[in-house]
Image (cartoon, rainbow, N blue to C red; front, side):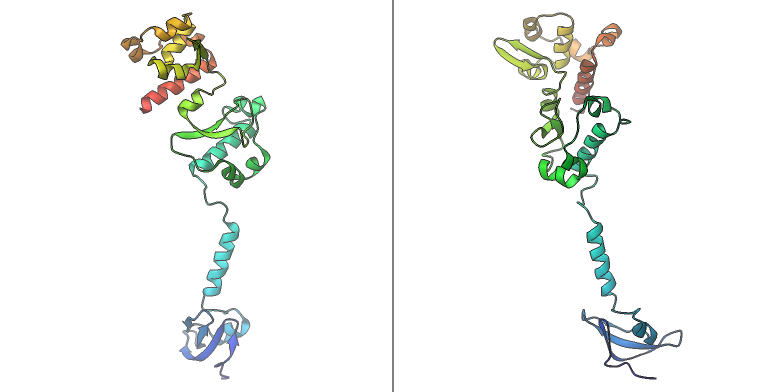
Length: 242
C-alpha cells in the first residue's frame, strides 16, 4: 500500500499510520492546521476530499452560518413584545382593538414597521416593568418623537378620553386631581356623571364605603361611555395589583 505519510489533504497533514478500521480500511494519524491530531481518516476519505479537517472546519461553518441566520437575539423580550403588539394593532384588522388604532388611520413609521432593530434603536430599553409603549399625541402615528416609554399613570393622563378639570385656576386631568386631592379617579368620574360641579367633585371628602363598594348600579354602568368603562377597568386593575 502506498504510504500517505507527509502528504497534505486540505487542513490535514498525514504523520503516520494509525491502524485498521472495523471495515478493514487503513487509518492514518493526521495533524490538523488547528493544532489537533486525529486518527480517524481513512485513505479513501482523504483522497476523495470527504475528510478535510479534524472536525474544526464543520464547527467553523456552523458558527458562521449561525451568525448569518441570527437576527437581534431579543425575541420575546418586553421591547420585542411592545413592537410586535404595536404592529398588530395598526396592521391587522382581525386584532382586538384594531378599530382604535389602524382603524382610525394610526400607523407605524416605515423603518419601525419593517424592522425591530430600527424600533429598538429609536426607543431603547424599557426603563422598568412599570413602563409600556405610549404615544404622546394619541391621534398621531407610532413614530420617533411621538413615542415614549410611560407608566400607567402617565398614560392615563394622556388618554384621548381623559377629562380635564379646572379648579382654583389649575387645570389637571382627573387622574392628576385624584393624586392631588386623595379622591379616587372612580369617584371623580362618578360625581361628574351625576352632575356634580367641579368644585363639589374635588372638595367633598370621599366616603370610605364608596371606596370599597365602587360603582355597582346597572343603570349607571349601562350609561357609561366606552372611555369611562375602560378607565374604570384600568383603575380597578391597578388597585388590585397594589
